[in-house]
Image 1 (spheres, rainbow, N blue to C red):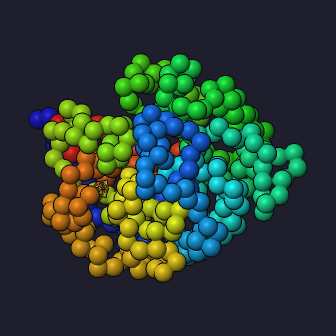
Image 2 (image 1 turned 180 degrees about the vertical axis):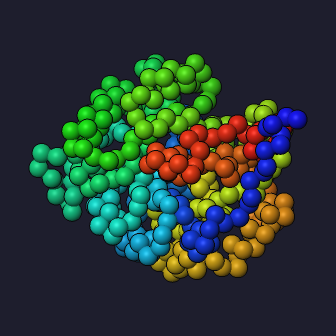
Length: 353
Ligand code: SF4
C-alpha cells in the first residue's frame, strides 16, 4: 500500500480549549504603508495607487486596547505582520515595548530589515546612540522574520523593488552579530517566496542561510485573493488535484487591521472579511459568537461560498494547512519537539495529489 495515501487526514477543529476560547495567533497589521514595492506583493501590484487605498497607522488607543485584551489569554503567537512595513510606523518601538511589558508573547516581527540601522525613536524622542536593531534586541523581541526573497543581488533587486541589497545584507549580519554579543534568545527566521522571478534562487538561499539562522522558510506564492499578480486559478498542478479542506483560519487566527477592525482572513487586504472593531467588540466575544460558528459550520460542510462570498472562489486556502503553519515553525524553532520540524509533503497529509 502507498504509505502516503494511508496517512490519516488531520482532524479539523480547535486544537484545545485555549484555542476555542481565543484565537491562538493574532496577526496585527500596524500599518498598510510600505517603503518597498515587491513584485509579488499587493504593494508592488498597484494597491497604494488604487482609489480606495488610504494610508493607515494603527492609533495608540487601538493598539493598547488590543494588547490589553491579548494579555488576558494564553496564546501561541502575536504576529506583527502588516499589510505594509512595521518599521515605518512612528511608534513601532513603543508598540514592541508595551506588548513585552504586558507579558504578551511570543511576539514575532515580520520585516524587510531595510531600516534596522535607522536611529531609534521612542516616546517621540531619539534614543542616543541606539539603532532600531539595538532596541529590538533590548526590548526582548522574541522572533524576527525577515522577508528576503532572493539569494543573489540581481534577483533581489528585481524582486524587492526600492530596497537596497547591500544595506539589508549588512543589517542582517549586524543582527546576527548583535544577537550573539548581547546573548539574546531572539530567534531569526528568513523567508523566500517561491515565485518565477526567484527560479534557481531557492536552493542557494536555503543552503547559504540555514547554518546561520534558526529557520529558513520557503513560502508558496499565493494569489492573496487576486492582489499579488498570481491569478487565483493558477495554483499549481499538485495542489489542484487535492480536495479542498476547511480554511484553518476560522479555528486558529484573526487579523487586526490598522483601524482596529477584526478580520477572519489574513490575505483579505481589501477588508471584506471584517467581523467587528476592537473599539466596540472584544476579540473573544466575536471568536465565540454566532457568526463565526455559522461560518465554521459552512466550511466543515463544504459550503464555502455560503460561509462568505470571498471564500467561495478563493484558492489561498491551499497555503493554509492544518498540519503546518508559521506558528508551528516558531514552536519548532523554540525547541518544541511535539511539532514536526518541517512540513510533510501535501499528498502525505491530504491524500494522493
Ligand atoms: S477560504 Fe480563502 S477567503 Fe476564506 S478565510 Fe480562507 S483564505 Fe480567506
